[in-house]
Length: 324
Ligand code: ATP
Image (cartoon, rainbow, N blue to C red):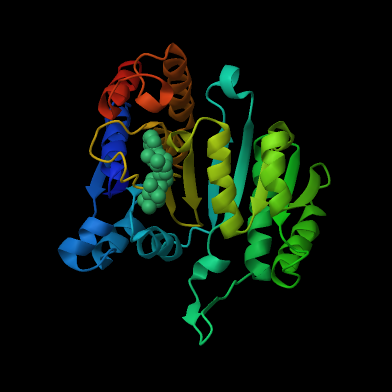
């Protein structure tokens, strides 16, 4: 039995998490769900966006399934990642519709604990200053993770993304550390690009990428760009992994523009649950669900509007579950 902390959060987070549980419930695995609150609504009701009780439930669980947080995202998901010490954020950019988007398939390995996301901002007489933190230890840990991931999954190239020409000390350290770690992995090809160039190459040469390792902010931006390459934010899952905890969430946010309409694409969250199954050592079920999702999208009828159908979030999940 696995103890899963479930934090649906705000907006479509509620809908896509419910849909995902519908699919998980069809597996012959015993999940014990503990629901916990976080986000804008929680802030309104309890006066805090991330109650201590939620942090405790998340820390004690075998894994956390998270939906989305709206305006309070920085105080919820960024803090949860820190509290759980999930130092890596894995964001697979994989086309589920190769005939439409080509065979795009690369992994973004995003450093998850530092960079500008430490939130060290202050007002100054002229405006404001934000500090960017890059440490040798975190750069080493994330580079190691990326190379090991490449090796374990049969990928042959790792690309570091940075802006070391301008940010010579911080991004310079990240780049230097990446190449130091690379020395141990002689069978893996390495290269590095500036983040601005990468933004273009992802559009012009997306098939050249296998594993991208990068700092927190660039990873955040490039993964949304990656979503655009393979059919939108409704398709991209993510895994936050640490030495002791794993938190799984769609890359998209609470999408207030479509919340409550039952039209949100549940794929990103169901695929996040597949990453959770991998983390729990239940990979065979993860692959099975992924295959079903590809088939269902290809059939094109029981899918949400962003995928060309007119099924609701829950209807699409029930259809996927019915094929398990
Ligand atoms: P937040 O402030 O919570 O990040 P947002 O609207 O700024 O919300 P997203 O939630 O990531 O950011 O949404 C960006 C766009 O992508 C919106 O137009 C939204 O409707 C669309 N979108 C996001 N997730 C999905 C989904 N699962 N299915 C369909 N469309 C989605």
